[in-house]
Image: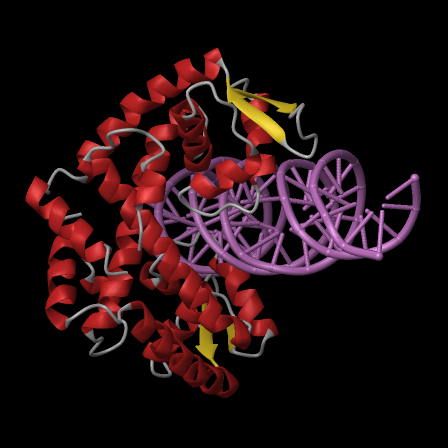
Length: 148
Length: 148
DNA sequence: CACGTACATTTGTCTATACAATTATTGTAG
DNA sequence: CTACAATAATTGTATAGACAAATGTACGTG
């Protein structure tokens, strides 16, 4: 990825700013590739993340707070996101019988099967993104990212 | 930054997926800190970026295509963003006399002065973000990010 | 058991982003 | 000179995200 085009906007950008800009660009690229991979499946990246979390629950229903905690990017708006997944038939939502303030959200059979198709597309996207990286690169990158 | 809480959602996440998630988390943190730093100044991160690009023009007006090219995160919507900066009195916009399809956008004196205050806030935010990094770390991180 | 407080979710509003359609202007081929 | 394509910006629509306010439910104290 070429960061020079942006860097030239102002003269003498120090390495700190340069790194921040670089990270934004990379994140943008990741986002774009992932979103494109999911497009044929008609779900957004966030919807995909919710489905993955629900699958990870292995049948145990999740409530909204759980989803919010586990979601990679914070979502004030999980209600509306779940609404859309319900419309697609991928999840269902019921009021929690033991505590009627809560809701119980489950992935449906249809959702599981759609999700496994998405997995394939996402795996390909990931391989494309990381094609220039060795395992050592990835390890080093993770160590550096941990400093944030 | 602790990525474990998310990682545990599914068992045995390979390093590739882990890295991607880690990057999203870091970008989210950067975004949050930057946005918070700009909040007292009443501009969004994107509006700040536009102002910086305009300052980088050193008096030469920019048209929308230029702004779009230079913007770190792609914006389909630069028109509306500029609208908001005009409302704040930070930029002005005129139809380009030599080619009436184009517009010329300039930063105002008021915009320049507001921008220099924002610079201070952003510099502090950046130092906070990168407090655990040495220059060598940043160089290494940039090299790795270039592989994307 | 009534009251206030805390909890869990939903709703409203504003901004941002992606993408398609539209408008206005310019350039060009016949 | 007219018709058509290309360019530049704007507008419309749908989704997403941040944040505050509102709703409904449960719990603890007197």
